[in-house]
Amino acid sequence: MADALGVDFDVLDDFPTSFVLTSGRKNLAQALARRLMTPAGFLQRAHGGDADYGYDLRGMLNQAQTLDQIASIEAAVKGQVQLDERVNAVEVTATFTLATSTLSVDILVQDDEGPFRLVVSVTEATADLVLASA
Image (tube, rainbow, N blue to C red; front, side, top):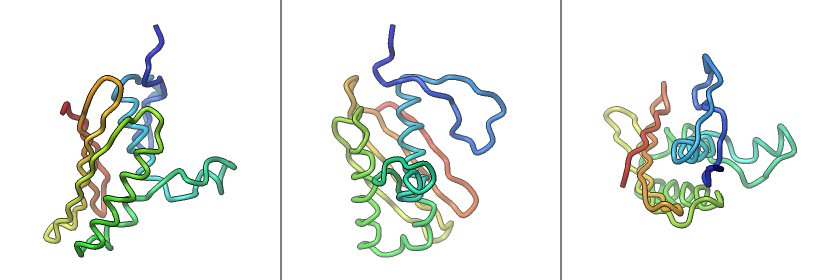
């Protein structure tokens, strides 16, 4: 039976130790996270791919300090997530914690199976992904 959310390699880490397949919501969540960690236009420049793909949250880390900047990040993330045809609706809330220099983006995604929550936290050293049920 085909998975409506697709099947892909489980390679969210920069250096995967094995190539295991993932499917379902985990696959969708990883695809969205990769989209949010890829600089805008990178796929087009590197591979002739989609010019609209990508928004590098890591690049926003040092800019996410005012309410206007946070609102701009929320709008950009929402726009990127909506570009994935598996996503029916999305709500985004971003927060920046100055004390730890952490940008956290809470994304409520609605797909054909219902809602689920995806949280991407970015620091200078890491970008972490947490997939949770809504």
